[in-house]
Length: 60
Image (cartoon, rainbow, N blue to C red; front, top):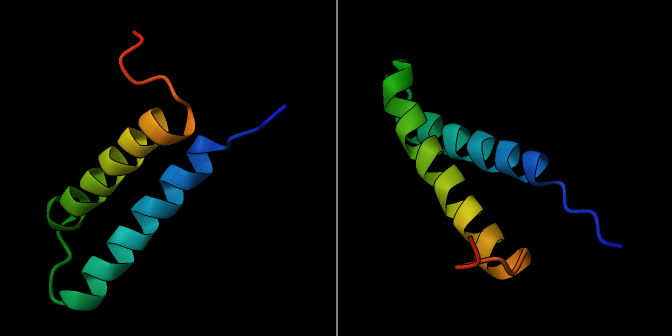
């Protein structure tokens, strides 16, 4: 039995992306600016989980 906590991984990816963006752009505080890279990080993490971890790519 293998438990994969995808939600925690997605939250960590989003938080890391927001922290990186805020460190590089301290004057930007509009959520539309820092959430765009966070959404990209989540999409990349989901794609990785589907293909590499869960092994269910192309089986829908």
